[in-house]
Length: 134
Image (cartoon, rainbow, N blue to C red; front, side, top):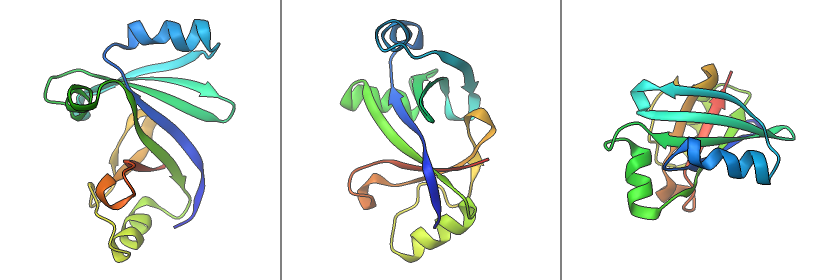
């Protein structure tokens, strides 16, 4: 698979409204986009650090994977997302051929209009890995 750069780092938070002052007032980042991804039961806020983005993830339902993550591990880094240049479907096929466990068998819609898919942390050295493409 051909990865061009880190697309974003996903950080689970209980409340975007409560988390933003730290990122904006202390670190000096600027939030440029907030949106809800209904099928993932998550509200996202994006901030930029150089060319890399930080994605704050707030659960919109107690059944969301982000709510379960926060319940089990607390707020903090949830995943790292990489931009792929050769297509997510190709990247998933290559990962699966190398015995990487897939969360998503095919791409799905994510925030900011990206196509996304996740690789399971049990086969990626404990790091939830997201593959993204525009």
